[in-house]
Length: 96
Image (cartoon, rainbow, N blue to C red; front, side, top):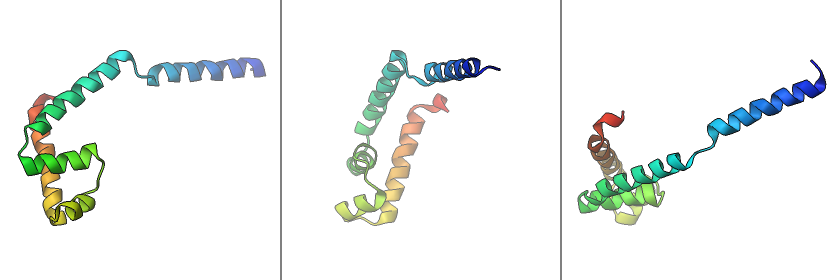
């Protein structure tokens, strides 16, 4: 195979990969819609569970950081994060 042909083949493969991995407007819309639905579920959680879930997923804090900030044990925060996740999953049982 000539060098030019090889380069062209590599370029085509890169273009195919870029086309597959680039999110579409529909993907972005569905992601935003799902985030909004999950946000609605989180907003309906009991106060402490909601606070911990928001600190963990929206603010990106670790369980240890949340425990220190709220004066709770690490295990309590871990249990609350697990409970919040179960509530979210149960709200969408068919999603896998």
